[in-house]
Amino acid sequence: MDMVKERQRSPPKRQNIKEKEGEGESDACRDRLSNLPDNLIHHILSFMDTIYAVRTSVLSRRWRHLWTSIPCLSFDVDIMHFATPDEPEIYEGEWDHFMDLVDEILIRRDGSDIRKFRFRDDDVDFLSKVNRLERALWYAVRHNVQELQLEINGDGFEFPPCIFSCESLRTLELNPRLQCMDFYNPMGFVGLKTMYLCCFNFEENTSGDPFSTCPVLENLVLEHCCFPPTEVFSISALQLTNLVILNPIKNRTCPSPKMMISAPRLTSFKYESCVTLNFNFQNLCSIDKVDINLCPFERSRPNIGEDFCVIPQELAGMLKGLRNAKDVVLSFLALQVLSTLSGLESEPSPFCNLKSLRLRHNHNDIITYLIKDSPSFETMVVDHPRLKLENTGEHGCC
Image 1 (cartoon, one colour):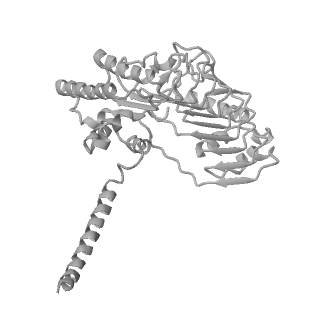
Image 2: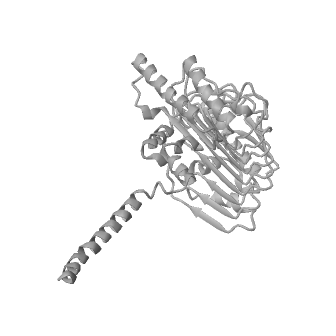
Image 3: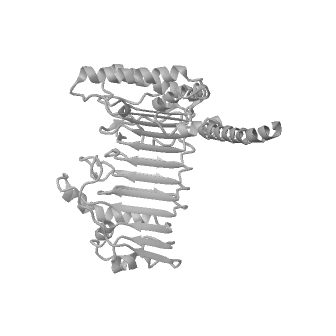
């Protein structure tokens, strides 16, 4: 009788064991994220705003101090859902609260180096705001920031000089957004490899060659920048491999600023605008890829007639300076502009090593002109024209 009772009791015991095993597997699944190594969790947290990342400290004891060593910091005022500037008292109070959070986070960090620091604000126009923001930038510089991204708009705001003397920087992206800001000569960019500048004015407070102090600069993007109207603006960079110029702003007193580019290792060049510049290319022995995209004029743009008179000659001169290019892309409007030049059939081709040509429109005379002096030419792609007359971008095309 006793053995029968034991046999009757044994199945429930096995069932209990399986239930416990199942519960253990469920707990392990729920805690799988916490079992990841710190560097992987830091990488996941780097995709969210740092204020949100700090909130993960309430998840468990494992997460309590993880955020203090995040190497990537991102602060965006938009996450605070501010009141409109029409309510200045409420707006200023919310902004101060946001900066209080930023200060608290920086104070409580473990002091480790910063790999990436991003800050975005659309309205930095009071001295108190500027001072608090500068303190945060100084913190990033003191902690050897490698990548700095700033999108800041505000009347009279200027990026502090500490940025332009930061030796640890490898990537710098500055965008003052809706205003043009004077560019100061970089003094200590000894390690900078990538630079993106938007809405900067190179007319004052700069020499004619502001990038000569960046000895290892490889990638340079200039968007909506204003260049000197009289002096030659130079881009001299021995290590530069990729150059992009987007929608330069022409000075009305000088419709064709002169730009000299000397970059023996430059392999890729892209130009996009509704106007052209007077380029002088030197030492472009390594140029490989060229992308020229001329955009439609704005109907209301001043001096539209004067600009259009010089664009065909400047475009032809630009292509001749890129003579060694092997892979070329030309927009529909660029072809139309070239077609206005007379006597192209008797002119030598601007290219001598062309292998691939991509066009936004089929124009037989221009095609012959472009490829006739390139014995190694291999491939041509002709796309259907897609001409957009509307103005794209918040600053306009020029």
